[in-house]
Length: 505
Image 1 (tube, helix red, strand yellow):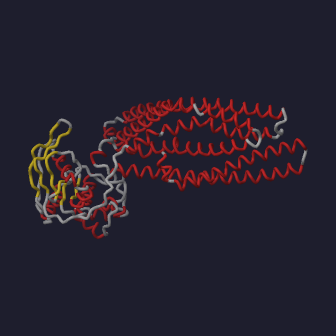
Image 2: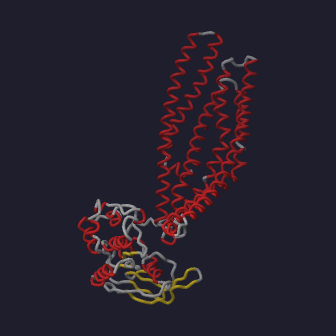
Image 3: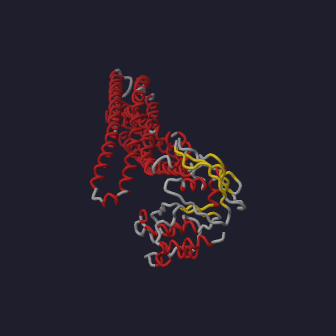
């Protein structure tokens, strides 16, 4: 957490300024309260009304600083949370296909939502509360010197004792936080999986299956959160007891100093307020520190994501040779799916890779497109080993259309362009190529019509043709299609295959 706080040092400096202003206002208010009590004791109306006016002014400044601090804390917290989400997403999407595939999409969604929300609530929020409390405590401690040195000595002794509390619960809090995180991930992953399979369960009249599973995983998540809260309650009670003992002892010492006429009667109002500020903070330090330390596993998990390739995009070199395989071998764990594959795919020629299910067709395409790099043997693209080529350079030369078309829950236009620049003429031309021009032209907003979640507002064949169009419009040197016409009717299948076979480049 230290790194991100330093990264946003300007924003946090502004928060610090407002915190100091608020703390100074509170300390001055304590002195004014003492003057008011002394004025009442001596029945001095002039000092009383003057002090009351000062009190109003100080409270106005206190409220102003508090308002500005709250706004700045919120803005900075959200900026830091967005920074974490962006950096985490950047590392995930550029960590390589095989690294990304190690976890489910539900797990990644949990990292970006639940984990970072926990960092906000259990890390950032307590940190700012702790810093504000410490600033107020230091200023309050200095203020006690103006009354009597013994008050400072007693306060420091009790503060040192109270600061030992966080050590008692540090490991327990970290363990419980980690468990809550894992249960959050599991719940989101399973819930996503069940809802994605709703159509299957609905057709079998097994809606009850979702209910039972959601209840089961939700119960486990609830137990994990209850255990966490139980531990935090123990921390809070322990700190609370120390807080009460500290304030009571300060009240007794102040009363004794008044009785022996070392300080004025009004001092008890000020010392009571100042000691409350100190011991409220110190009593909660254990809770704040335990909460902040509990987010350490979350930061460590996000930091453990492999660093992305930060090399800039390279300029595409002219293609003068195709793809050459030499003694290519690939295995999943102990299962060998490709062995001794030697073949040359020449430029401007067409190839069909055929074979039974499970014989390695998709695996071969994943290797050729740079997704699977842990192969043995050689795979050359444009006379360069593909494992040594930056992925951006591979995609500059190759367009890969997966057998499982995924359309995003956005417009037809955005599904085709993915934020690249294409004119409407280019979009309509490629839609005509896949026999979708007439269909899209009849949609309510034409190119800007939303296709729905998982393309549920259009048919499977139409979704696959949009996926094909998304690849075709980019006109790369090499086009690889993995069963990309499997959902098409005979007419469209033949039309698209004829286009591909006759396209010379």
